[in-house]
Figure (spheres, rainbow, N blue to C red):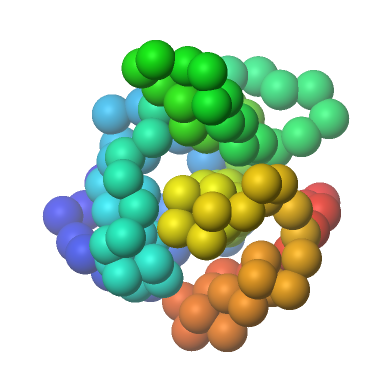
Amino acid sequence: MPRTKSLATLINYYGEDRSFTPRINKIPTIYKILNKQIFNNKLKNPKIIVKRIHGALGYFEFSPYATKHCHKITLHNKFRNFREFAEILGHEMVHYYQKLILKQNTAKHNKEFYSFTKKFAKLGLKLKRVYR
């Protein structure tokens, strides 16, 4: 992975035509880029897990009763390309923002969720409810 603070450089580096397998040690770099460019560094670092998921590419969980990791992002272990991975990570970060910053009881696909569409578009990403 190139040393960069630009999402566009990473998208060009990985390309659109090859699959992307996220590595847990590389995810914090991409998380920081998205956090800075979309969320103005307002998000904390949640626990992030990569594993095979049936029926989803990622999901956000929160537990008000957990003592250590009350916010968790789980990502699928294989994506079509790097852009799809960045879109899914960003999508789950929007849910995290809804819960952490906006203090919404449920982090759903509502008006506040879709208010990030323009910020995603500036980075060349799409914010959708369903991917694939």
